[in-house]
Length: 88
Image (cartoon, rainbow, N blue to C red; front, side):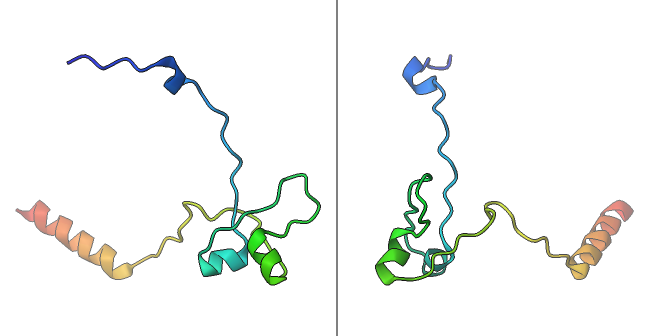
């Protein structure tokens, strides 16, 4: 079955939105963090402004970054399993 052509309106590239990061308070509470417009001098989000808190944003995004945990026991089990398969 041939692929169904899509309308050109769905294919056109839309400009990506800038990555918005939640402030530390909103991140901790897992609540929606609405940061102010980029040209605003005051960088306090709506949640911190409501609570009169100091609003602090992280310097970088943690998206997709996970520390790699090295497990020695796992490597030993893998090497034994591969050695067992080779001896068969």
